Length: 215
Image (tube, rainbow, N blue to C red; front, side):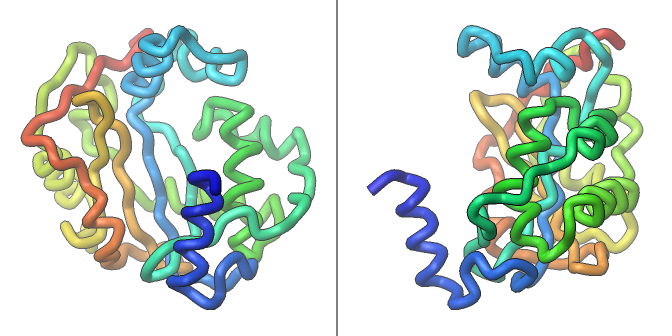
């Protein structure tokens, strides 16, 4: 059994609504620290053409990885087979927030089809969710590598976003770098608690934030 099938099987056992479009409890807005992603791609020998927009020198800081439907335990994925083909003009319209075409197509197939929304409405919801979150000022134009604790990153987001609590945000890491900030939101895009997501937080005492490129 592949890892993907094992994960799907586990999630199915956790929630009887598994993979029913629109049947979920809340969203996770995942914000990726773009400089870490690009350094990780370089560690692995570079990325494909889809990553050239994101890693080609433009000053991206936090970018949207995705807006993921979740159950209180587990999550749905790939809720339509085959997925309705995402219109290219919608993909292009999202490049300011999600600067990798392949990512946008994948997020629609894996997560958007589980939202119960049409393609345009799903990506409009992503845009609304991102607009509801303020990025702390210190992370908008980071010109030098920063070493910081995951809890400091959480605290900065909580301070910048009234209503956001420590139980509704998780900071993840990879190879000692900040990877993502994941924020839990209701279907109405209000901040909410999410115990399972909070448990997935980075266990390190400190992480590095590579500087924004081209800034």
